[in-house]
Length: 405
Image 1: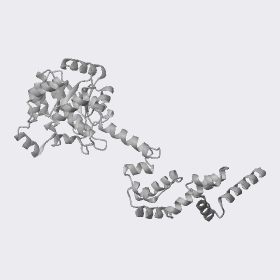
Image 2: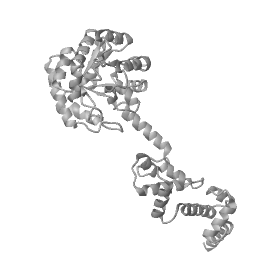
Image 3: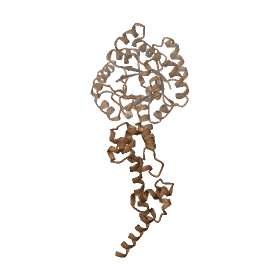
Image 4: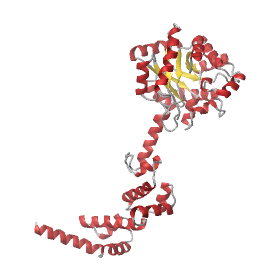
């Protein structure tokens, strides 16, 4: 899709819908369903690929692989073959010493990418490490140069900026979209633990967007994630700034994937309940105190009393030693595990014998006793009579009650 068509489409979306959406992705699946969901353009980023590995987006800035090679392979193998009607932008590491910018930009255009975005960006690095990188020629101006060359080649360009100076450089380079990068996305299990407030984000974006408007050019103004990871957050940004769109990475792949996989797996692992107080749910969440181990054990007995139950197996699942679980169980219940299980099973057997014409042997099997002689012995020990005598007495009591009525 050529730059002129992309810009015409995006401006029409802004005019009709009020804003546009960009999705920074790292897999064909994320690309496919982001496009189906209405994303106006996709950004193929190395950060997205690290997210699909269950890693932090910051892996993009470390020497784990060659960013440009990884993005090119991902684009050719996973994205471009299945994404036909949505522009796909290349996340370019402009400071890569092994590429000639102009030639490489022509190569990625020929591959089918509609444009570029400067990511990973030096704007995300500060301090002495930033100074050392710049001394070696790895500068933000190199990213601005890539945007300028891409503009010359009629590629659509998105520029990530974090301050006024970077915005000025990208405006001069001819970027089509100025996107204020608000930092790594909060939320989920791998999300940023430190981030600016939504009001700080508002002040920063409004300052930079005022700068964009002063450039007297029809520049699209967007923000990237950071503290804004919900529609409510973005509603506030739209209402209080000149923002025209949102670019999300983790928002559209990591966070929903985490939730979907976690909740689905938990549903199969648990006893069919999503109740946060459910012992299995709390075990999976790691939200424990010593009494919860006992609750989990009692819940397991309640659900599986008819099966072969071993305290050692429950201890493994609960990630504690059998001796620890045994001690905690006795302290909480006043009886040991075996005694509790026997009483629970025999009470269930009594309920069966009281309420139906079930034969005693079948009742024994239904509560986990497959040796009837042993069942009968235990039943008599705890109830003072055999299972057959207990059932007959229950029938007599029902007859007496019936006659009284």
